[in-house]
Image 1 (cartoon, helix red, strand yellow):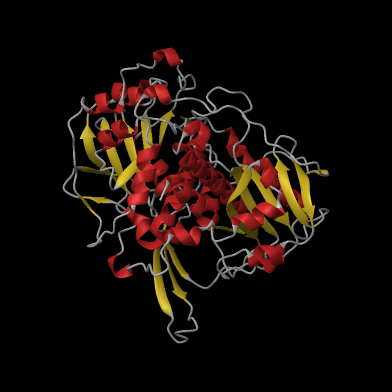
Image 2: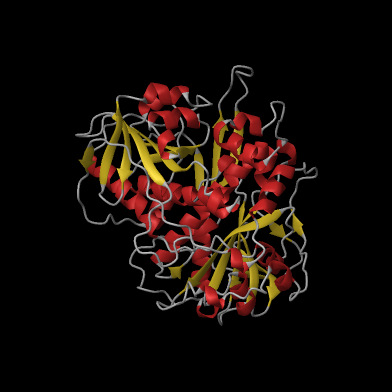
Length: 527
């Protein structure tokens, strides 16, 4: 199968991405976290702060604050014990379900992403570490100062020596392929994106400067971390700095044409640290490897910003939303309360102020620093927010596009679209007639492939995931629930929003509204 056809199926015909007779072997499921064996480890403080409010302007980097940042980003935070209800085939078979939760959502709670960190400050030996979420500790993979190596892997754009650490968000292919088969490729980009989104939010609370690099020499970075590219690959590199004047985007003249992934790999000895997966039988996933291979960049000369492209807009009524001050909330509290409901929504009218807060605060994440926009002022967001609204105060039922610059809604189509949206779901696990807000994140139908190659697809999914996490945090802070899902007919939703002539498509759907949490036992894993 060609990659073009593969990505088309992932977007519009997801049933073709998974064989009809495929069944996940839960008895042989992989662990939701990676465990290294026989390597030195440094424990991190379990005295996690209960709030992230009133932090100093910039917190001095040390081992304790790094541990807090990693835990709030991707640590194990809860154990949830619930029951899967009986189905028609087995009406008396109620199955208990134990899940280890984190502050970010993940399809099936499988968490295919892993976090690595390169540390270069005085509290611990300089080197590359894996964040062991299961034990809340750092496992050393490679000791030494790799400022120059990492800077060259990023095309000499970033002053790595002024950054106290650099985080790497990777994807382990098998961790959710075992359940979702080839559809895992779409999920993996979104999962990486929500982790990045959470990391940026936490780093911002500590006053750290960040930049997301989507373009880097993949094989050189994987080689530094000792990753086998048939199992795992880095998707994004995020340096963190406590300095305000860090250089993030050096000019193209500083990129050495001789710096290639192959030449950099020769400079460091290969490492292959042993790790435990648990699965005894790992199925092949050739399409995931093919897509990952096609996305790799071998030379820094390939790095480039993405040209600004204004969205083609339809003519329609514009509805200004309530003007307001920035909405303040405690990130730690919002993380603890976040819940992904299914049949737990109950209908309640939404005020226009609440809608304005949700849209305004969520789209503020478009302002993050990254190597696609570089130093561009007011970059045009690549992900747009659309919504089908029902019984929102002073707003007619209908489908709308949110204009973040004008803080206004642009009407696309009037009417109550809940029945049509319900029909577009692949599973009847949500009653949309109880949901006042049905949001869709919309992006380029070509997934930026003409400009960025197949790397553009996974970048688009990551940016969508970043906005998903932002939406879920604001939703939680408002006291609601948010449920992201991919089990919907993208073509039907594109038709509602008249996206064909805009060359756009619906990437993910998020249901938002008041909820009644289901009965379950849940315990926090922090002091």
